[in-house]
Length: 223
Image (cartoon, one colour):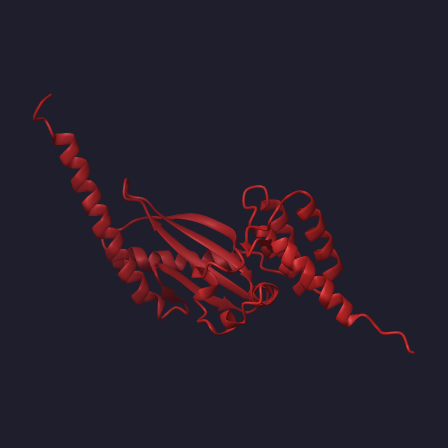
């Protein structure tokens, strides 16, 4: 009916309330993180857990009273390899948060996506979110580079950019020949590995880097 804006007004108010709650939750989470071993940057939490880099994204819906935690991991060893492959030496000096927020970094593997029951108090919800994140991380089977490799292979169809993480993981695990074979297979299939710089794809750059590295490490015959 003309002039009947009840539903539209309700929707606007709801969205406004959700934005306010999301803002409060982000602030509360940042404050609570300091006491629980996490660091916060641009709406995400991150930390080093032994040889693993862990990120925790808190996603608050603006359309319904729903908040999700998404935990992701990757080996600490693979980003420096990625930067060396693309000759991005300056990235070694970036802050730890760059591993999560930087454009030229290896993608992380999602290991948990869990709902957080929302409380009227954003502070309480933030506290519950950190507890749930800790529980999920403790339950995660962060065993080895081989485990991470296997999980990346399973997820490649949904996350093709994980190919860069898979290849650098093989390199970190001293399996350069396997990494090179994977690069050559990917290039033959027209895959890039999710990154292209100066018209050179990641798999092409990685293959060149591996060839140089393996040549340098090969034993030289006595003359």
